[in-house]
Image (cartoon, rainbow, N blue to C red; front, side, top):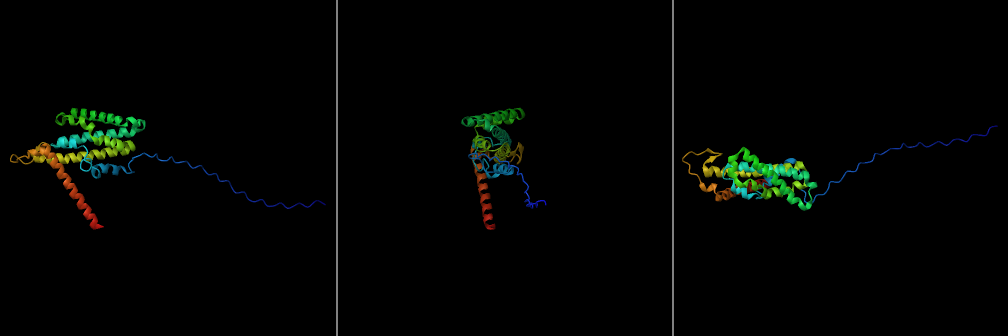
Length: 242
C-alpha cells in the first residue's frame, strides 16, 4: 500500500507590492531681509499712483517738483523722464542683483540710474530741444533724486523683474500725475494759458507769483489740503456705513 499523502496547507495570498514614486522636494523660497510683502502687479502699480504717491504722500523729489512745475509741458517732460529712469533702473537692478556684491550695491545702483538718466537727457534733447533747454540741469539731476535710489534699494533689489517694473511704472506715473496737477494750476493762474494756449483772453491779469517759487509751495499746500479733506471724508463715510 502507498503511504498516505499529507494535506497541503493553503498558501496565504501575497499582497501586491505598490511602488510609491518619490516626492520631489520643493525648494524653500529664500528669505530676503526687508523684502516687501507679496502683491499682485496691479497692487504694485496702484501703490505708487495713489496709496504711496511719491510727491503727495512720501514727499520725495521735492526739488524738481518745485523747480519745473511752472509750465505744464515742463512737468510732463520731467515726469516722463523720471518714469523712464525708474522703470529701466528697476529692471536692471532686479535682473543683476545676484551679481552685485553687497558692499558696492549702492555705487552700482547709482551707476545704473546715471546710465538711464543720460539716455533720457539725450532723447529729450534730440526730440524736444526747447523743453530740454527750459529744464536745464534738472534732467541730469534726476540721478540725485532720492526716489530712484530708494526704490532700487528698498524694492527692486528684493523682488523679481516683473514686480520691479510694475513698481517703477507706478511710482513714475504717480510722480508724473502730481507734477502735471501742480504745473496745470500754476500755468493757468500764473500765465492764463495751458500748454501755450491762451484761456482767458487779453483782459486777464496773470498771477505772476504763481510761476515763482512761492507759487509752487502754495500750490502744493492746496493739493495736500484737498487730499487730506478727501481722505477724511472717505473715512467718515466708511465709519457711517459700518
